[in-house]
Image 1 (cartoon, rainbow, N blue to C red):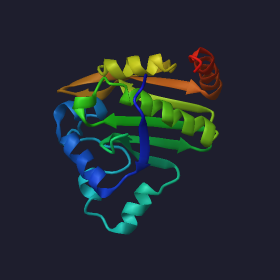
Image 2: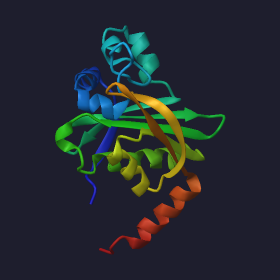
Image 3: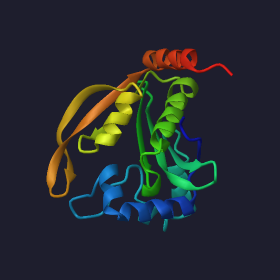
Image 4: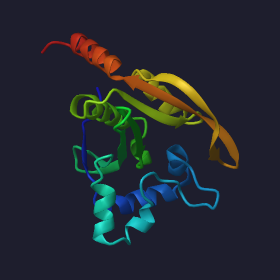
Length: 194
């Protein structure tokens, strides 16, 4: 059984934690790694910079309807990470990304629970056609998680990810709305009756 999570609007305290988590080499490498000049790569904003930004800039980043940024919380009210949905309206697509920054809860189902919640938003709330992810192939737990959730390998971006002084491939994996609907129907059918 998956743990319960909630997706909340990001606060400055959440972003402070994201910045600290990305300073950890292991967390950083499982997210997007580092720029060639050394800073952690982060999509949509730079944590250390946005913390110093005026409120107008903060609002532009965190209230963008085409880049939804969420903080991931457990039922005890603890911040665990961040998730993003980047909507490509013209194509009906959404790119998903997530980071569980707390290493003490890795491999406990929080990533899976988060992706399932993101997929419900993408398909049931936003009415989009396709969700996709770009995962470095060295992040084997993430690749396996997306496969288990029903994502299909759609292609390989050759040597697109710098990691520990080398270049690695990344996997583009996707799910269509019809595949999500079929999986959702199967999950309901297989759920034990109460």
